[in-house]
Image 1 (spheres, rainbow, N blue to C red):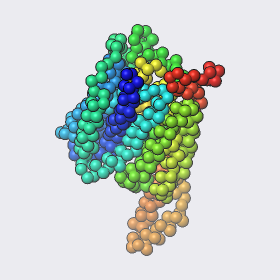
Image 2 (image 1 turned 60 degrees about the vertical axis):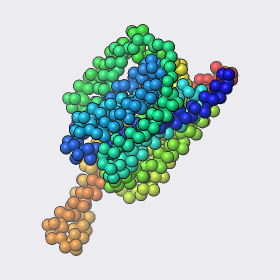
Image 3 (image 1 turned 30 degrees about the vertical axis):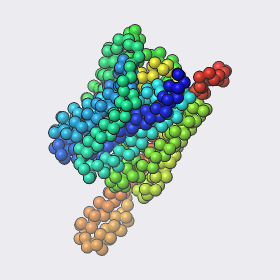
Image 4 (image 1 turned 180 degrees about the vertical axis):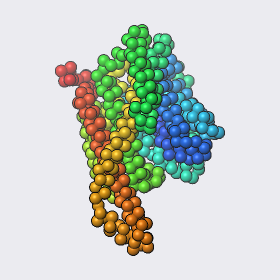
Length: 520
Protein backbone atom coordinates (compact mmCIF):
# COMPACT_ATOMS: atom_id res chain seq x y z
CA UNK A 1 0.00 0.00 0.00
CA UNK A 2 2.76 2.42 0.97
CA UNK A 3 4.74 1.66 -2.18
CA UNK A 4 1.69 2.32 -4.32
CA UNK A 5 1.14 5.63 -2.60
CA UNK A 6 4.79 6.57 -3.12
CA UNK A 7 4.60 5.73 -6.80
CA UNK A 8 1.49 7.81 -7.14
CA UNK A 9 3.03 10.73 -5.24
CA UNK A 10 6.36 10.71 -7.05
CA UNK A 11 5.24 12.42 -10.28
CA UNK A 12 3.54 15.22 -8.32
CA UNK A 13 6.82 16.50 -6.86
CA UNK A 14 7.93 17.67 -10.32
CA UNK A 15 4.59 19.43 -10.78
CA UNK A 16 5.06 21.05 -7.40
CA UNK A 17 8.53 22.10 -8.54
CA UNK A 18 7.02 23.74 -11.65
CA UNK A 19 4.48 25.68 -9.57
CA UNK A 20 7.09 26.80 -7.05
CA UNK A 21 9.50 27.83 -9.82
CA UNK A 22 6.74 29.83 -11.57
CA UNK A 23 5.87 31.71 -8.40
CA UNK A 24 9.51 32.47 -7.65
CA UNK A 25 10.06 33.69 -11.20
CA UNK A 26 7.03 35.98 -10.99
CA UNK A 27 8.12 37.48 -7.66
CA UNK A 28 11.74 38.16 -8.68
CA UNK A 29 10.81 39.36 -12.18
CA UNK A 30 8.60 42.03 -10.67
CA UNK A 31 11.60 43.68 -8.98
CA UNK A 32 13.50 44.48 -12.17
CA UNK A 33 10.32 45.14 -14.16
CA UNK A 34 9.31 47.89 -11.76
CA UNK A 35 12.74 49.55 -12.01
CA UNK A 36 12.17 50.20 -15.71
CA UNK A 37 8.73 51.72 -15.06
CA UNK A 38 9.86 54.21 -12.38
CA UNK A 39 10.36 57.20 -14.76
CA UNK A 40 6.78 56.75 -15.97
CA UNK A 41 5.55 56.48 -12.37
CA UNK A 42 7.32 59.77 -11.59
CA UNK A 43 5.52 61.53 -14.44
CA UNK A 44 2.11 59.99 -13.76
CA UNK A 45 2.10 60.54 -9.98
CA UNK A 46 4.06 63.83 -10.12
CA UNK A 47 6.94 63.01 -7.81
CA UNK A 48 10.74 63.22 -7.78
CA UNK A 49 13.55 60.66 -7.97
CA UNK A 50 14.25 60.51 -4.23
CA UNK A 51 10.60 59.90 -3.35
CA UNK A 52 9.80 57.41 -6.10
CA UNK A 53 12.85 55.36 -5.05
CA UNK A 54 10.80 54.21 -2.06
CA UNK A 55 8.73 52.11 -4.44
CA UNK A 56 11.83 49.91 -4.74
CA UNK A 57 13.33 50.50 -1.29
CA UNK A 58 10.04 49.78 0.50
CA UNK A 59 9.71 46.45 -1.31
CA UNK A 60 13.30 45.48 -0.53
CA UNK A 61 13.02 46.32 3.18
CA UNK A 62 9.64 44.64 3.67
CA UNK A 63 10.78 41.45 1.93
CA UNK A 64 13.95 41.31 4.02
CA UNK A 65 12.05 41.76 7.30
CA UNK A 66 9.56 38.95 6.71
CA UNK A 67 12.13 36.39 5.49
CA UNK A 68 13.55 35.47 8.94
CA UNK A 69 10.09 34.47 10.19
CA UNK A 70 9.33 32.02 7.37
CA UNK A 71 11.02 29.07 9.05
CA UNK A 72 8.84 29.29 12.15
CA UNK A 73 5.71 30.13 10.12
CA UNK A 74 6.29 27.16 7.83
CA UNK A 75 6.66 24.82 10.78
CA UNK A 76 3.61 26.28 12.50
CA UNK A 77 1.21 26.35 9.55
CA UNK A 78 2.87 24.03 7.03
CA UNK A 79 5.19 25.12 4.22
CA UNK A 80 2.63 24.18 1.58
CA UNK A 81 0.02 26.40 3.22
CA UNK A 82 2.48 29.24 3.64
CA UNK A 83 3.45 29.06 -0.02
CA UNK A 84 -0.20 29.24 -1.08
CA UNK A 85 -0.68 32.16 1.30
CA UNK A 86 2.35 33.98 -0.15
CA UNK A 87 0.98 33.58 -3.68
CA UNK A 88 -2.36 35.03 -2.61
CA UNK A 89 -0.76 37.99 -0.84
CA UNK A 90 1.60 38.72 -3.76
CA UNK A 91 -1.27 38.57 -6.26
CA UNK A 92 -3.44 40.81 -4.08
CA UNK A 93 -0.56 43.27 -3.64
CA UNK A 94 -0.03 43.36 -7.41
CA UNK A 95 -3.69 44.13 -8.04
CA UNK A 96 -3.65 46.90 -5.45
CA UNK A 97 -0.45 48.40 -6.92
CA UNK A 98 -2.04 48.56 -10.36
CA UNK A 99 -4.90 50.57 -8.85
CA UNK A 100 -2.77 52.95 -6.73
CA UNK A 101 -4.05 56.52 -6.85
CA UNK A 102 -0.95 58.30 -5.48
CA UNK A 103 2.61 57.54 -4.43
CA UNK A 104 1.94 56.79 -0.72
CA UNK A 105 -0.71 54.23 -1.69
CA UNK A 106 1.66 52.67 -4.25
CA UNK A 107 4.44 52.34 -1.64
CA UNK A 108 1.98 50.82 0.87
CA UNK A 109 0.71 48.29 -1.66
CA UNK A 110 4.31 47.46 -2.65
CA UNK A 111 4.90 46.52 0.99
CA UNK A 112 1.90 44.17 0.80
CA UNK A 113 3.34 42.69 -2.39
CA UNK A 114 6.74 42.30 -0.70
CA UNK A 115 5.25 40.33 2.19
CA UNK A 116 4.11 37.72 -0.31
CA UNK A 117 7.38 37.76 -2.26
CA UNK A 118 9.54 37.65 0.86
CA UNK A 119 7.74 34.57 2.19
CA UNK A 120 7.57 32.91 -1.23
CA UNK A 121 11.31 32.54 -1.93
CA UNK A 122 12.55 30.80 1.25
CA UNK A 123 9.33 28.78 1.51
CA UNK A 124 9.78 27.53 -2.05
CA UNK A 125 13.33 26.42 -1.29
CA UNK A 126 12.13 24.60 1.84
CA UNK A 127 9.47 22.79 -0.21
CA UNK A 128 12.21 21.47 -2.50
CA UNK A 129 13.92 19.94 0.52
CA UNK A 130 10.66 18.46 1.78
CA UNK A 131 9.53 16.90 -1.49
CA UNK A 132 12.83 15.70 -2.95
CA UNK A 133 15.19 13.11 -1.48
CA UNK A 134 18.85 13.91 -0.91
CA UNK A 135 20.05 12.31 -4.12
CA UNK A 136 17.68 14.45 -6.26
CA UNK A 137 17.91 17.82 -4.53
CA UNK A 138 20.76 19.12 -6.66
CA UNK A 139 18.78 18.63 -9.85
CA UNK A 140 15.58 19.98 -8.25
CA UNK A 141 17.24 23.10 -6.83
CA UNK A 142 19.01 23.60 -10.16
CA UNK A 143 15.70 23.60 -12.02
CA UNK A 144 14.03 25.75 -9.35
CA UNK A 145 16.87 28.26 -9.57
CA UNK A 146 16.18 28.83 -13.29
CA UNK A 147 13.37 31.19 -12.31
CA UNK A 148 15.56 33.06 -9.85
CA UNK A 149 18.35 33.50 -12.41
CA UNK A 150 16.25 34.27 -15.49
CA UNK A 151 13.96 36.83 -13.89
CA UNK A 152 16.45 39.67 -13.22
CA UNK A 153 17.70 39.58 -16.83
CA UNK A 154 14.30 39.34 -18.49
CA UNK A 155 12.91 42.13 -16.31
CA UNK A 156 14.22 45.16 -18.27
CA UNK A 157 12.93 43.83 -21.61
CA UNK A 158 9.55 42.83 -20.19
CA UNK A 159 9.22 46.10 -18.30
CA UNK A 160 10.19 48.10 -21.37
CA UNK A 161 7.59 46.47 -23.59
CA UNK A 162 4.82 46.63 -20.99
CA UNK A 163 5.50 50.24 -20.04
CA UNK A 164 5.80 51.49 -23.62
CA UNK A 165 2.72 49.67 -24.89
CA UNK A 166 0.35 49.47 -21.92
CA UNK A 167 1.56 51.99 -19.33
CA UNK A 168 3.32 51.55 -15.98
CA UNK A 169 0.31 50.00 -14.25
CA UNK A 170 0.60 46.98 -16.55
CA UNK A 171 3.82 45.84 -14.83
CA UNK A 172 1.64 45.13 -11.77
CA UNK A 173 -1.65 43.87 -13.16
CA UNK A 174 0.14 41.41 -15.47
CA UNK A 175 0.97 39.46 -12.28
CA UNK A 176 -2.68 39.01 -11.39
CA UNK A 177 -3.72 36.33 -13.95
CA UNK A 178 -0.37 34.55 -13.51
CA UNK A 179 -0.79 34.64 -9.74
CA UNK A 180 -4.34 33.31 -9.93
CA UNK A 181 -3.24 30.38 -12.12
CA UNK A 182 -0.30 29.57 -9.82
CA UNK A 183 -2.50 29.83 -6.73
CA UNK A 184 -5.14 27.53 -8.25
CA UNK A 185 -2.53 24.93 -9.16
CA UNK A 186 -0.90 25.17 -5.74
CA UNK A 187 -4.28 24.68 -4.04
CA UNK A 188 -4.92 21.55 -6.12
CA UNK A 189 -1.47 20.09 -5.45
CA UNK A 190 -0.75 21.23 -1.89
CA UNK A 191 -3.99 22.55 -0.44
CA UNK A 192 -5.33 21.08 2.79
CA UNK A 193 -1.97 19.81 4.04
CA UNK A 194 -1.90 19.62 7.82
CA UNK A 195 1.08 21.20 9.59
CA UNK A 196 3.42 19.10 11.67
CA UNK A 197 3.87 19.22 15.45
CA UNK A 198 3.39 22.61 17.08
CA UNK A 199 6.70 24.50 17.11
CA UNK A 200 8.19 26.14 20.22
CA UNK A 201 7.27 29.75 21.06
CA UNK A 202 8.43 32.35 18.58
CA UNK A 203 11.57 34.30 19.51
CA UNK A 204 10.18 37.82 19.23
CA UNK A 205 13.20 39.44 20.87
CA UNK A 206 15.67 37.90 18.43
CA UNK A 207 13.38 38.48 15.45
CA UNK A 208 12.85 42.18 16.18
CA UNK A 209 16.59 42.69 16.74
CA UNK A 210 17.37 40.93 13.45
CA UNK A 211 14.67 42.87 11.60
CA UNK A 212 16.06 46.18 12.86
CA UNK A 213 19.57 45.10 11.85
CA UNK A 214 18.44 44.18 8.33
CA UNK A 215 16.39 47.36 7.92
CA UNK A 216 19.25 49.57 9.08
CA UNK A 217 21.87 47.76 7.02
CA UNK A 218 19.90 47.72 3.78
CA UNK A 219 18.76 51.31 4.26
CA UNK A 220 22.36 52.37 4.89
CA UNK A 221 23.55 50.60 1.73
CA UNK A 222 20.75 52.05 -0.35
CA UNK A 223 21.16 55.63 0.90
CA UNK A 224 24.95 55.48 0.99
CA UNK A 225 25.28 55.33 -2.78
CA UNK A 226 22.79 58.16 -3.32
CA UNK A 227 23.46 60.51 -0.40
CA UNK A 228 27.09 59.75 0.43
CA UNK A 229 28.64 57.28 2.85
CA UNK A 230 29.34 59.98 5.44
CA UNK A 231 25.85 61.49 5.46
CA UNK A 232 23.97 61.67 8.74
CA UNK A 233 21.26 59.16 7.84
CA UNK A 234 23.83 56.57 6.73
CA UNK A 235 25.96 56.94 9.87
CA UNK A 236 22.82 56.67 12.00
CA UNK A 237 21.80 53.53 10.11
CA UNK A 238 25.20 51.92 10.77
CA UNK A 239 25.00 52.79 14.48
CA UNK A 240 21.51 51.32 14.82
CA UNK A 241 22.61 48.22 12.87
CA UNK A 242 25.57 47.65 15.20
CA UNK A 243 23.38 47.89 18.32
CA UNK A 244 20.71 45.62 16.79
CA UNK A 245 23.27 43.00 15.73
CA UNK A 246 24.78 42.92 19.23
CA UNK A 247 21.32 42.54 20.73
CA UNK A 248 20.49 39.75 18.29
CA UNK A 249 23.66 37.76 19.06
CA UNK A 250 23.13 38.07 22.83
CA UNK A 251 19.49 37.03 22.43
CA UNK A 252 20.29 33.98 20.31
CA UNK A 253 22.89 32.83 22.85
CA UNK A 254 20.55 33.14 25.82
CA UNK A 255 16.99 32.23 24.70
CA UNK A 256 15.84 28.63 24.71
CA UNK A 257 14.33 28.64 21.22
CA UNK A 258 16.14 31.22 19.02
CA UNK A 259 14.70 32.42 15.73
CA UNK A 260 17.93 31.28 14.06
CA UNK A 261 19.51 28.40 16.00
CA UNK A 262 23.23 29.10 16.10
CA UNK A 263 23.70 25.33 16.00
CA UNK A 264 23.17 25.61 12.24
CA UNK A 265 26.61 27.18 12.05
CA UNK A 266 28.26 23.95 13.16
CA UNK A 267 27.58 22.57 9.68
CA UNK A 268 30.55 23.59 7.54
CA UNK A 269 28.75 23.25 4.21
CA UNK A 270 25.92 25.45 5.45
CA UNK A 271 28.34 28.18 6.56
CA UNK A 272 30.05 27.95 3.16
CA UNK A 273 26.63 28.26 1.51
CA UNK A 274 25.88 31.43 3.46
CA UNK A 275 29.19 32.99 2.47
CA UNK A 276 28.79 32.03 -1.18
CA UNK A 277 25.24 33.47 -1.12
CA UNK A 278 26.86 36.86 -0.49
CA UNK A 279 29.48 36.34 -3.22
CA UNK A 280 26.94 34.99 -5.69
CA UNK A 281 24.66 37.97 -5.10
CA UNK A 282 27.50 40.32 -6.04
CA UNK A 283 28.06 38.31 -9.23
CA UNK A 284 24.39 38.16 -10.18
CA UNK A 285 23.05 41.55 -9.14
CA UNK A 286 26.34 43.29 -9.86
CA UNK A 287 26.23 42.42 -13.55
CA UNK A 288 22.48 42.98 -13.76
CA UNK A 289 23.28 46.46 -12.43
CA UNK A 290 26.48 47.16 -14.41
CA UNK A 291 25.76 45.90 -17.91
CA UNK A 292 22.46 47.76 -18.42
CA UNK A 293 24.13 50.94 -17.17
CA UNK A 294 27.04 50.47 -19.58
CA UNK A 295 24.77 49.80 -22.54
CA UNK A 296 22.33 52.62 -21.80
CA UNK A 297 24.61 55.37 -20.46
CA UNK A 298 27.70 54.74 -22.57
CA UNK A 299 26.40 53.09 -25.73
CA UNK A 300 22.92 54.71 -25.70
CA UNK A 301 20.82 51.58 -26.11
CA UNK A 302 17.23 51.69 -24.86
CA UNK A 303 15.82 49.35 -22.22
CA UNK A 304 14.30 46.94 -24.74
CA UNK A 305 17.52 46.61 -26.76
CA UNK A 306 19.49 46.14 -23.54
CA UNK A 307 17.19 43.39 -22.35
CA UNK A 308 17.40 41.54 -25.66
CA UNK A 309 21.21 41.64 -25.61
CA UNK A 310 21.36 40.41 -22.00
CA UNK A 311 18.81 37.63 -22.51
CA UNK A 312 21.28 35.02 -23.88
CA UNK A 313 23.23 35.18 -20.63
CA UNK A 314 20.11 34.28 -18.66
CA UNK A 315 19.33 31.47 -21.09
CA UNK A 316 22.87 30.14 -20.66
CA UNK A 317 22.45 30.13 -16.89
CA UNK A 318 19.11 28.34 -17.22
CA UNK A 319 20.66 25.65 -19.42
CA UNK A 320 23.60 25.20 -17.07
CA UNK A 321 21.88 24.99 -13.69
CA UNK A 322 20.18 21.59 -14.12
CA UNK A 323 23.51 20.15 -15.32
CA UNK A 324 25.30 21.63 -12.31
CA UNK A 325 22.63 20.18 -10.03
CA UNK A 326 22.91 16.76 -11.67
CA UNK A 327 26.70 16.77 -11.20
CA UNK A 328 26.27 17.81 -7.58
CA UNK A 329 24.01 14.82 -6.96
CA UNK A 330 26.62 12.51 -8.54
CA UNK A 331 30.03 13.84 -7.46
CA UNK A 332 29.30 16.35 -4.70
CA UNK A 333 29.34 20.15 -4.69
CA UNK A 334 33.05 20.93 -4.41
CA UNK A 335 34.14 20.41 -8.03
CA UNK A 336 31.17 22.08 -9.83
CA UNK A 337 31.11 24.87 -7.23
CA UNK A 338 34.80 25.60 -7.68
CA UNK A 339 34.37 25.64 -11.45
CA UNK A 340 31.53 28.12 -11.04
CA UNK A 341 33.58 30.56 -8.97
CA UNK A 342 36.59 30.47 -11.30
CA UNK A 343 34.58 30.79 -14.53
CA UNK A 344 32.41 33.61 -13.16
CA UNK A 345 35.43 35.58 -11.93
CA UNK A 346 37.18 35.11 -15.28
CA UNK A 347 34.07 36.29 -17.16
CA UNK A 348 34.21 39.57 -15.25
CA UNK A 349 37.82 40.00 -16.31
CA UNK A 350 36.76 39.52 -19.94
CA UNK A 351 34.08 42.20 -19.53
CA UNK A 352 36.70 44.83 -18.74
CA UNK A 353 37.69 44.74 -22.45
CA UNK A 354 34.40 46.37 -23.53
CA UNK A 355 34.67 49.83 -25.06
CA UNK A 356 32.62 52.38 -26.99
CA UNK A 357 32.90 50.40 -30.20
CA UNK A 358 31.90 47.03 -28.70
CA UNK A 359 29.01 45.55 -30.64
CA UNK A 360 26.00 43.75 -29.25
CA UNK A 361 27.59 40.47 -30.33
CA UNK A 362 30.70 41.28 -28.31
CA UNK A 363 28.55 41.53 -25.18
CA UNK A 364 26.45 38.48 -26.06
CA UNK A 365 29.46 36.20 -26.50
CA UNK A 366 30.98 37.36 -23.21
CA UNK A 367 27.82 36.25 -21.43
CA UNK A 368 28.46 32.60 -22.28
CA UNK A 369 31.16 32.07 -19.61
CA UNK A 370 29.27 34.26 -17.16
CA UNK A 371 26.07 32.26 -17.62
CA UNK A 372 27.93 28.98 -17.16
CA UNK A 373 29.76 30.27 -14.10
CA UNK A 374 26.69 31.58 -12.28
CA UNK A 375 24.78 28.39 -13.09
CA UNK A 376 27.57 26.37 -11.48
CA UNK A 377 27.63 28.72 -8.48
CA UNK A 378 23.92 28.48 -7.78
CA UNK A 379 22.91 24.82 -7.67
CA UNK A 380 25.97 23.19 -5.99
CA UNK A 381 26.31 25.59 -3.07
CA UNK A 382 22.59 25.79 -2.39
CA UNK A 383 22.27 22.02 -2.49
CA UNK A 384 25.28 21.48 -0.22
CA UNK A 385 23.96 24.03 2.29
CA UNK A 386 20.44 22.58 2.42
CA UNK A 387 21.67 18.98 2.56
CA UNK A 388 23.92 19.85 5.50
CA UNK A 389 21.10 20.79 7.90
CA UNK A 390 18.46 18.62 9.50
CA UNK A 391 15.20 18.40 7.59
CA UNK A 392 13.23 20.08 10.40
CA UNK A 393 15.51 23.11 10.07
CA UNK A 394 15.07 23.41 6.29
CA UNK A 395 12.73 26.38 6.55
CA UNK A 396 15.02 28.31 8.87
CA UNK A 397 18.07 27.46 6.73
CA UNK A 398 16.41 28.55 3.48
CA UNK A 399 15.26 31.80 5.10
CA UNK A 400 18.81 32.56 6.25
CA UNK A 401 20.22 31.81 2.79
CA UNK A 402 17.73 34.19 1.21
CA UNK A 403 18.51 36.90 3.77
CA UNK A 404 22.21 36.61 2.91
CA UNK A 405 21.37 36.73 -0.80
CA UNK A 406 19.29 39.89 -0.28
CA UNK A 407 22.01 41.54 1.78
CA UNK A 408 24.70 40.49 -0.69
CA UNK A 409 22.80 41.96 -3.62
CA UNK A 410 22.38 45.30 -1.85
CA UNK A 411 26.02 45.30 -0.74
CA UNK A 412 27.28 44.42 -4.23
CA UNK A 413 25.28 47.15 -5.97
CA UNK A 414 26.29 49.74 -3.37
CA UNK A 415 30.01 48.89 -3.54
CA UNK A 416 30.18 48.65 -7.32
CA UNK A 417 28.19 51.88 -7.78
CA UNK A 418 30.61 53.69 -5.47
CA UNK A 419 33.66 52.28 -7.27
CA UNK A 420 32.14 53.27 -10.62
CA UNK A 421 31.56 56.85 -9.50
CA UNK A 422 35.04 57.31 -8.05
CA UNK A 423 36.88 55.68 -10.94
CA UNK A 424 34.91 57.81 -13.41
CA UNK A 425 36.08 60.96 -11.63
CA UNK A 426 39.66 59.63 -11.50
CA UNK A 427 39.77 58.87 -15.23
CA UNK A 428 37.97 62.11 -16.08
CA UNK A 429 40.60 64.21 -14.31
CA UNK A 430 43.47 62.51 -16.11
CA UNK A 431 41.87 62.45 -19.55
CA UNK A 432 40.86 66.11 -19.20
CA UNK A 433 44.49 67.01 -18.54
CA UNK A 434 45.49 65.21 -21.73
CA UNK A 435 42.69 66.88 -23.70
CA UNK A 436 43.86 70.34 -22.62
CA UNK A 437 47.09 69.73 -24.50
CA UNK A 438 45.43 68.30 -27.58
CA UNK A 439 45.74 71.46 -29.64
CA UNK A 440 46.02 69.64 -32.95
CA UNK A 441 42.82 67.70 -32.32
CA UNK A 442 40.96 70.91 -31.47
CA UNK A 443 42.25 72.55 -34.64
CA UNK A 444 41.08 69.65 -36.81
CA UNK A 445 37.64 69.65 -35.19
CA UNK A 446 37.41 73.44 -35.51
CA UNK A 447 38.24 73.25 -39.24
CA UNK A 448 35.59 70.54 -39.63
CA UNK A 449 33.01 72.74 -37.91
CA UNK A 450 33.96 75.71 -40.09
CA UNK A 451 33.49 73.60 -43.20
CA UNK A 452 29.98 72.78 -41.99
CA UNK A 453 29.08 76.46 -41.84
CA UNK A 454 29.85 77.36 -38.21
CA UNK A 455 31.31 80.79 -37.44
CA UNK A 456 34.72 81.19 -35.78
CA UNK A 457 33.51 81.31 -32.15
CA UNK A 458 30.79 78.65 -32.48
CA UNK A 459 33.23 76.41 -34.38
CA UNK A 460 35.69 76.44 -31.47
CA UNK A 461 32.88 75.82 -28.97
CA UNK A 462 31.66 72.87 -31.05
CA UNK A 463 35.22 71.49 -31.18
CA UNK A 464 35.61 71.78 -27.43
CA UNK A 465 32.20 70.20 -26.85
CA UNK A 466 33.13 67.25 -29.04
CA UNK A 467 36.41 66.74 -27.17
CA UNK A 468 34.64 67.00 -23.81
CA UNK A 469 32.04 64.46 -24.88
CA UNK A 470 34.75 62.03 -25.99
CA UNK A 471 36.63 62.53 -22.72
CA UNK A 472 33.48 61.82 -20.68
CA UNK A 473 32.65 58.71 -22.68
CA UNK A 474 36.23 57.42 -22.44
CA UNK A 475 36.32 58.05 -18.69
CA UNK A 476 33.04 56.19 -18.21
CA UNK A 477 34.20 53.27 -20.35
CA UNK A 478 37.48 52.92 -18.46
CA UNK A 479 35.65 53.18 -15.13
CA UNK A 480 33.28 50.36 -16.12
CA UNK A 481 36.31 48.26 -17.03
CA UNK A 482 37.80 48.87 -13.58
CA UNK A 483 34.53 47.96 -11.87
CA UNK A 484 34.27 44.69 -13.81
CA UNK A 485 37.75 43.78 -12.53
CA UNK A 486 36.67 44.60 -8.96
CA UNK A 487 33.57 42.43 -9.40
CA UNK A 488 35.77 39.58 -10.60
CA UNK A 489 38.01 39.96 -7.56
CA UNK A 490 35.01 39.94 -5.19
CA UNK A 491 33.76 36.78 -6.89
CA UNK A 492 37.18 35.14 -6.60
CA UNK A 493 36.97 35.61 -2.82
CA UNK A 494 34.56 32.67 -2.91
CA UNK A 495 37.27 30.27 -4.11
CA UNK A 496 38.65 29.32 -0.65
CA UNK A 497 35.11 28.63 0.54
CA UNK A 498 34.40 26.47 -2.50
CA UNK A 499 37.52 24.41 -1.82
CA UNK A 500 36.42 24.03 1.80
CA UNK A 501 33.23 22.18 0.83
CA UNK A 502 33.10 18.58 1.90
CA UNK A 503 33.25 15.84 -0.72
CA UNK A 504 30.15 14.11 0.56
CA UNK A 505 27.77 12.80 -2.07
CA UNK A 506 24.08 12.40 -1.24
CA UNK A 507 23.21 8.71 -1.09
CA UNK A 508 19.94 6.92 -1.56
CA UNK A 509 18.50 5.28 1.55
CA UNK A 510 20.30 2.03 2.21
CA UNK A 511 23.45 2.93 0.30
CA UNK A 512 26.79 3.03 2.04
CA UNK A 513 28.16 6.47 2.73
CA UNK A 514 31.69 7.59 1.98
CA UNK A 515 34.26 6.36 4.52
CA UNK A 516 35.06 9.01 7.13
CA UNK A 517 38.66 9.16 6.03
CA UNK A 518 37.62 10.15 2.51
CA UNK A 519 35.72 13.22 3.68
CA UNK A 520 37.95 16.15 4.59
